[in-house]
Image 1 (tube, one colour):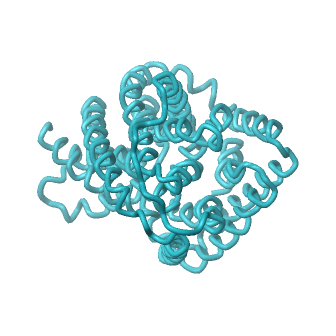
Image 2: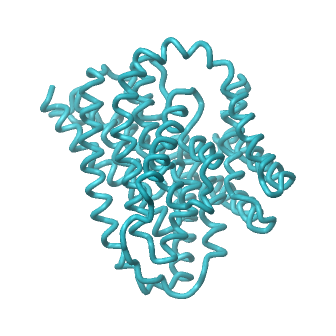
Length: 404
């Protein structure tokens, strides 16, 4: 089994490297590809190898997906809100710092997440019946608090409601899309339109500044605070059904301002993304419930012992951290690029990728989401309220209203 787990870990790290660095590709996609290709892999792809590869790809992805968000401003489902402070730091010449902060947050979540997984095996079955009914209410209360406490509650509520309607429209009409990489491919044009392209359209012009790294601008207390908050948020959404990393990122804005405490927010959201992966695994083993595409794929095959996958996750996290920090050190290579031309190239790339993944319906989603994503800048409200596109369908799902 050790040999199988080691081989799977190596394969998963390679797949996570691809999915993390290529916008629009998620670890869920890699898990589906492994399942479909397993019959062709006669040699060396037993159940343990397959499971380790899937989980290693998921963990590796949570480290590396910050890189396209930081340097290109392209979000995915896990970095939709954190792309704003990370890309802003890049435009200030602090792109390497943003990536290193993100890697630190994911590493901290790995350290904290392992004992949480062990505790979850015993605690989750006891608590689950008491919380199944209240997830939608919890989300509504938190988001209602965010809206009321915003500078313009009326506009914040309007943006949240409109984005929620857009999300419902997208998921209810998903059959119109090509869905070449599964249902998660719809999130690519949706979140890129809400969080990516509007930011690029109003971004600064001129040349990309020199990227310099003078250390991480966070003290030890801030690192500990953000790591714990992010891990707690990621663990929560990894446990509760219907929630996602995007929901955790939205919840974190209630305690950490992504526009005022950018470094802390990047660290917290990265910790949340990685913690979510570990707690999803605990929910699978403790409750036999799947919280993301990778867990669904794992549940379709014989599962190895949880300790084996946790070891796989730790090794993957260690390697992914080293790769992320190494790639961040090349940030100075982008200095001197024309920002306007780079933004235009990214917009074209996102548009073509939306067409490739979802067909003409993907372009429609991208256009509608971009129009709505431009509103927060015009009315001076926080862009986080665009997360209604994900949160509202999740709330309705929790209340038994089918929108998927």
